[in-house]
Length: 137
Image 1 (spheres, rainbow, N blue to C red):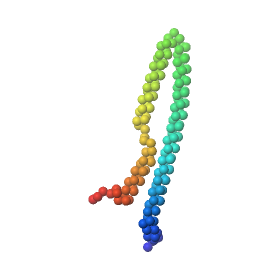
Image 2 (cartoon, rainbow, N blue to C red):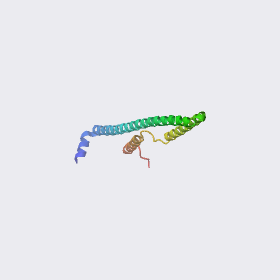
Image 3 (cartoon, rainbow, N blue to C red):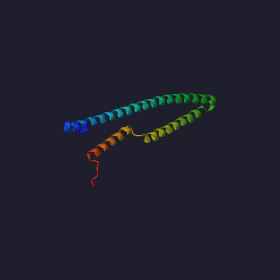
Image 4 (cartoon, helix red, strand yellow):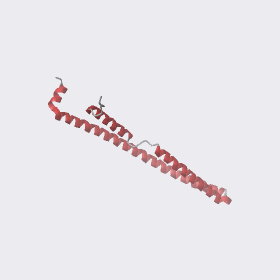
């Protein structure tokens, strides 16, 4: 009789249940750590994107105002036309950005994709180990 069999027979059913519970707790802890890592990465990514978007909006807005002012000064006699065309251009650009955001949202990967995949794999392995995942035949 080897050491593992002595240990299993000494603990009996209670020992096996305790070992299963410890294994499940370890799996749960690992999955929670993975989820925490994914949350942190998502938070950092979102904060970075928001900061870059704010900087972009500021630069584009300031550039647009300065460009329109320059065009109005350059074409003083047609200043109403310049302002109207500039406004139409800004609205066109806003529509393009809106549709780009919509397209980006449609193609974004689901949040916690890795955690869900790992949990599904754990569930599949637990079902296979307990015999619930087997097909009769």
